[in-house]
Length: 257
Image (tube, rainbow, N blue to C red; front, side):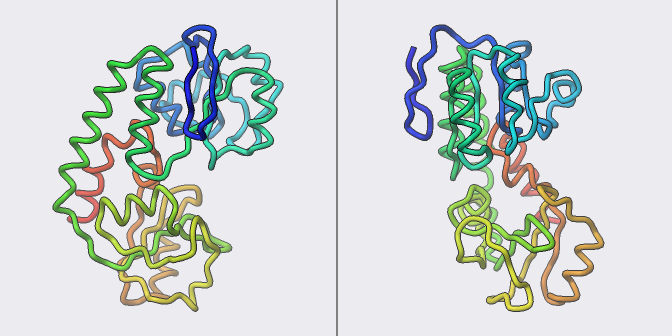
């Protein structure tokens, strides 16, 4: 069987995979929600959902520093990664162990395509198609949500780092929430907040990868006294698997309070 991943690479499988290693938290949760159970044998230390998998599955290191020997010992017949979250050097080494399917996600359409690809490759096509239909319906309900505010989305402190264009979070902010991302530099630029122009009307402090808390909100309020500052669940903004199903309702509640 041959499949094309989202980096346009051909993946060859001898049979439907029965021993899967997942290198990405949001994709691990997706595998769970597709009902793959015992077929997933390895996950990363950041794959915190579902909790029962986090407690009981073999952890093979982090997303950026995979323990190759642990993966090899699991004898996987498929490894699933992501271009942004995993290191190229790790992926090249892992390809010596088993076929590696890579996602590359920039928008909701990419996410839905990935979910359907999992369905075909892992023989859970009906579940995957149903999940995609449900996610699409939930996002269609967000159409009335137009923030129309200049937004700064922060993911790190010391140094401060934000989210710019050419990212999944940017797509969520602008295309689905109707916000205006004030950052023009692509990806995840380091920021000098004192020199930031234009000034944000709203600052969103993500729960991950840096765990922003109320004390950080108070610090930023001193710098931007006119801005509305919200602590937000970063998983709903940046996880592009089955977590998307609950994201629209979360956004609706967050911005209507």
